[in-house]
Every structure is written in C-alpha cells, then in structure tokens.
View: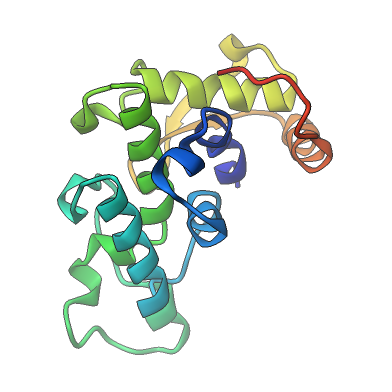
Length: 171
C-alpha cells in the first residue's frame, strides 16, 4: 500500500522528466499491476529508457494476477517473466532512482543504499513519523517495506493527496 509514497523520491528528483516517464509509467511505479500485455510493454519501455533489460529486475516472477483472476494457466511462460510481476513497475522506478543517484544498480534494493534511504525518508516524511521508527521488513517482491501505524499511513496518503507543486522537496 505504500507504493505511491515509495515513488515520491523519483518524482521529486526529476526522474520522470530525466527518463521521459509519463503518466502510465508513473502509475506503474506507484501501484501494482496485473501482468497484462499492456503492463508488460510499459515496464519493458521503462527499462529500455534506462538502458536496461528485465535482467536488472530483482522482483522475481510469478503467476500474473490477470491469469489468476480468470483461472487461466500460463501457456507462454508468463509465470517466469519478471516483466509481468505485479511489482515490476515499482522496481523499474527504484532502478531509475538508483541510476539518478549513481548507485550501483545491482544493489537498488539495499536498505542502506542511496535509493532505499531516500525512499525510507520519503515514507517517514509523508507519514509524519521519525525515520528511525519505521520498522524494516521485506515485501513479497524482495523490496524493503516498512511497518507503521495505520493512522500514520492515513496521514501519509492525506499529505500525498494535498501536496502542491510549490511544496519543498527533500531531494
């Protein structure tokens, strides 16, 4: 549920403009997707804009939600395609942020790395909690994730929804 907050540092650092990411790419940085052909193509396009291939993704692979929803079985290796992982857009956003920060891309998920340090601070700032209070965990796609009170998460989404372009940036 914190994906929109995890995308903030990329937006604030000018990553959308730098890499030519539009609304579709931002949507996949900030949300899960169902592994459709359209979603796969958008993620692949993001990676190409970064000069990368799907091999850079560390989210793993699994049965796409679209197939699960319709009770279908993979017929063409969809369950082995990291581009169809529901978090591949978020991971592509993390790769973009790591590239902006000149962090080695193979460590883009390192909680102590530049990219994830920025993400953690963004989540803390948006949710109005001390960064040290965020308990570190790992979500199902291998990305760092944080435990925080539901009230704080609600504050984070309120702040995201009411932010203005004139608000000062952390990056």
